Image 1: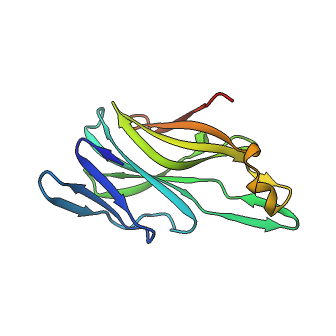
Image 2: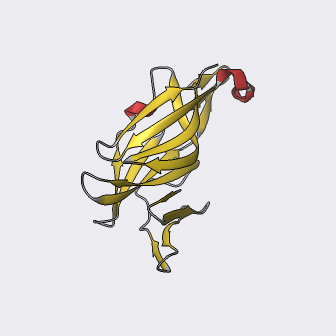
Length: 159
């Protein structure tokens, strides 16, 4: 993603780099406080309240098979503050309900203190491993992160 000319780049090894091409400056962020297991997605935004840039990393740490059932672990979220050069984990309650999780697919954009992702909502549990491949069990959502209050919100797309 990008914000105010700063581009946020990441690789499959968990390294995250902020790049400002206009002034030819790179910053390798410190290692994340969360394990780099399954899938993760990052976004960047500017918090007008604290006047700080924040990188959000949503980590979806995988699944386990219990008997015949496939159970997903809840997503975990951490925030990097440019001013302090530190990561901290925040609650991700907004990314799950009693029966579902929200998963990011791609960071889409930042606009006026809000970071937006396109993603989907899916059940936390499936009857079998192969049930998870059925697209009708997933619902496409736009979810967004307010950099000021550090809370996620979501909107289901119409059917």
